[in-house]
Length: 245
Image 1 (tube, rainbow, N blue to C red):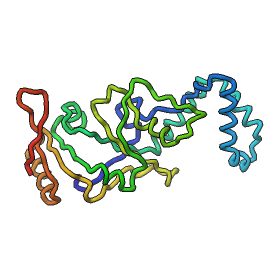
Image 2 (cartoon, helix red, strand yellow; image 1 turned 180 degrees about the vertical axis):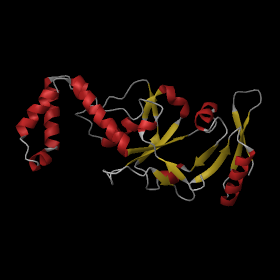
Image 3 (cartoon, one colour; image 1 turned 135 degrees about the vertical axis):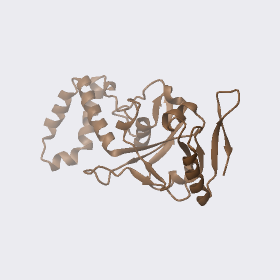
Image 4 (cartoon, rainbow, N blue to C red; image 1 turned 180 degrees about the horizontal axis):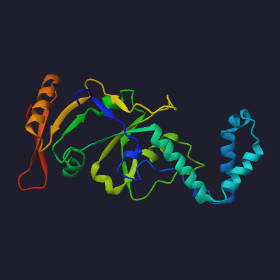
């Protein structure tokens, strides 16, 4: 918090094995006509590269057709490559629209001993650092991405990064993502420094130590950032907060 630094995690660090694992569904190539359409689309989109490499176009077409005879294997190979690429080049900043989840304080707030930072959504979204941002959609069904008709790349990318199982709905997640295209042969620096005025408030955990409270209050007082103390609401399984600075 002192340096306004946030870390954009690779999906391999997530506790949800389905997160950012929504890939194109090649089992939707369920007719000979669709397979041929997919082959022609793939060849045409890579035609310039294939010619520059001196590749035989008809051989490539037949080779792809042969691979598509086993859709299970083709899908697995595609998913393996897609996951490897995603883990290496995608960074995700996971936030939440709620501060008072008892469960999330336990999971992500050091058992209520940590603190919660409230950001100005518009400022960080328009900072120029992130590629896209938005609320996560929670659903019982994995989105189906047609490998032929996935023309809307923005919507396809949201399917991949902003759709999660309904089990996670309580998190009310809002996430920002970035693709590290600029240095494809290097491990990306996943630390981002947010704008000066991006922090709007800080909420101290129920079980935070007095030492940590003093440090947080001192820093926020200097920056004129409101500080709240979370507390138990009497006779209810609910958190409330009180302004203390």
